[in-house]
Image 1 (tube, rainbow over the protein chains, first blue to last red):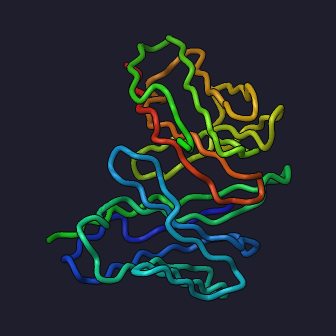
Image 2: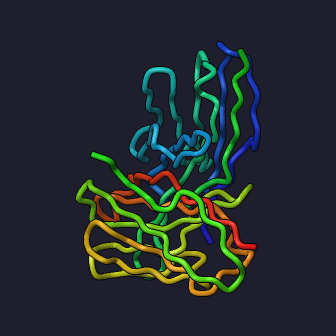
Image 3: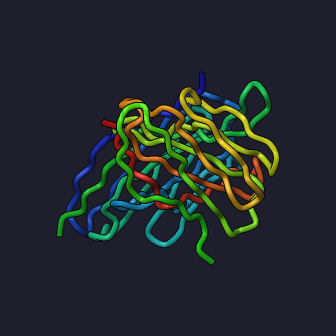
Length: 115
Length: 113
């Protein structure tokens, strides 16, 4: 079935450095790729998403790139700050046999930003 | 505008007990979802409701039932809790099934002993 793999599972950076999280997906029909940030004790929050008709999208310090040929997409955080510390999830859309549109999530990356 | 709310925040059950997790959204969304989150496994879909009056199984539905009470509310019931159901449960909603942008509640941490 459809699968989304996410790497690394943990990432530790110094404040001010960049962080990159990578995901690969298996369904070539996927065309929507969101990223969620989950802070401790809270639910996942959508922070950025990209659709297959663009290769890159930026929002201040975060950016997402998509390579449809290789079936992978990445989250880039520049000038990291301690408040960026959280678990980040990638996802890709898919279609169930019954026609339901679903999101398939990666296993998550725990990012720690050290002052 | 509270978004997606869930009750309770924490719950401890003994094996065999039953309980219902409540979820409500005030964004006038048509679609609602229940996920469970386990360490190292991301979010797995239990059940979803594409629109009021419909519910369907997701990836891991065994041991659960759901009710879409109205457009705002979607509850998840454990009839006979098992230790394997120890997890964090998240409710989410989206404008409609194909809009994909899902908004999550704060979660319920359930422990079954």
